[in-house]
Image 1 (tube, rainbow, N blue to C red):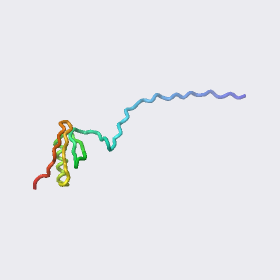
Image 2 (cartoon, helix red, strand yellow):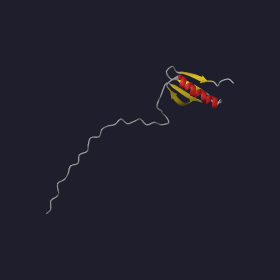
Image 3 (cartoon, rainbow, N blue to C red):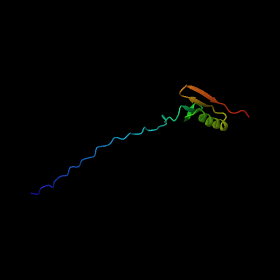
Image 4 (cartoon, rainbow, N blue to C red):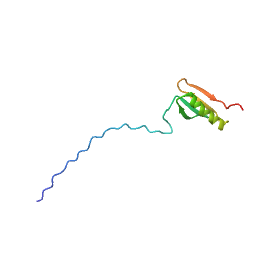
Length: 87
């Protein structure tokens, strides 16, 4: 009768838990700042300063004067409508 060879015990290393990054979806985008640029009531971007949001909003308004462009301040809960410059 033949004997079995010795068996080896394999031990797994403990799994180090990593911080799982939150998935970015269309429903929830990461926030970059308190000033949100809205075009026809749809948020298109988030900015750290009011001036940066207004600058981008004004550029959009110049290209497409028919759309409504606004900057929403999430800290003070106020909306500022961007008007096209008078020619």
